[in-house]
Amino acid sequence: MEIIDGKAISQQIKAELKAAVQFRKSEGKKIPHLAAVLVGTDSASMTYVQNKVKACEEIGFESTLIRYDDSVPEDILLAKVESLNQDRSIDGFIVQLPLPKHIDELKVTQAIDPLKDIDGFHPRNLGNMVVHLPGFLPATPAGILELIRRKNIPTEGKNCVIIGRSNIVGMPLSIMLSGNSNPGNCTVTLAHSKTTNLPEICRQADIIIAAAGQPGFVTYDMVKAGAVVIDVGTTRIEDPKAPKGWRLAGDVDFENVAPKCSMITPVPGGVGPMTIASLMMNTLKAMELKGK
Ligand code: NAP
Image (cartoon, rainbow, N blue to C red; front, side, top):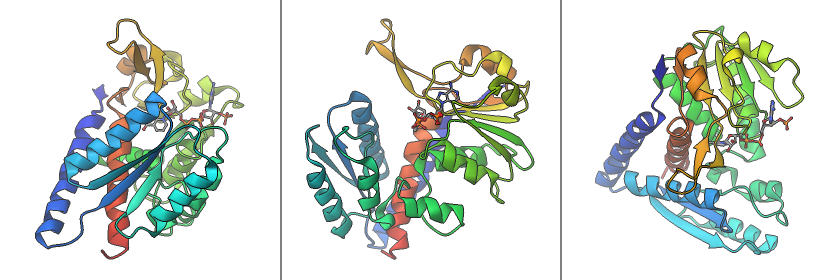
């Protein structure tokens, strides 16, 4: 059994991106510039955004953080999105989700210029992915694919069960892994809360990708011996022994499932760092696509 070190792989990607930035600098070319919009003070969102800004610093990208109170009106946020669309110094930007309830997330996502949509959430980028046109792939699924590629995990002809069908993780991942590509060519089952007999379905899987947001949901009896298990789940659960009073829990009962797998990702240190690496790759791509 191998525990996949997503942090180490992401460090490798960041080192490659840093070298690309230094090369661009040596040629007098523009440095990628990422902007992040954060609304409110949700501590998980603040951590995610801080980690993205920190990654920019590590690589040598420029970054700009724009913050609003929870109470920011939707039209002010939409006006900011439009100004970022127009700002030629910004190559790509994200609006950290979730947004407060009075703001329509889909409206905000659709307002982002698809050519600056480095999260890959815009319907045009999702559509481009489906018909294999160039565009931005959603950061978490793209990070998982990169992890699979770099670990040489065979996918062709394999049964893959993805648990969770969200627009940002499970659904795009199912399209990517079932496509005629490498990684890809899997036979994918996309499971959700209405799926019946999920343990039986999972036991047929060569690859299980858990993205349900349900701590410890994938148990020993659901996993075939030798399967690859990728845990996307990150739920904060109270833990009085942890320094912050909470810890991150994955969707997999890691302790019991790990010995049965050929490879498994931990939480934290698996998919999370790959998501950030993938966002950084999209930022560089955003700049290159415009021929800057
Ligand atoms: P989401 O929008 O809440 O979707 C959860 C999905 O899981 C839904 O499709 C839901 O089914 C399904 N589900 C929930 N309970 C289930 C059950 N008991 N059996 C089968 N399916 C079930 O979640 P998300 O945004 O995709 O995120 C999923 C998890 O990944 C969360 O823990 C999130 O924090 C984490 N995440 C991590 C990263 C990272 O970089 N590491 C990035 C994104 C998300 P229905 O559609 O039927 O409701």
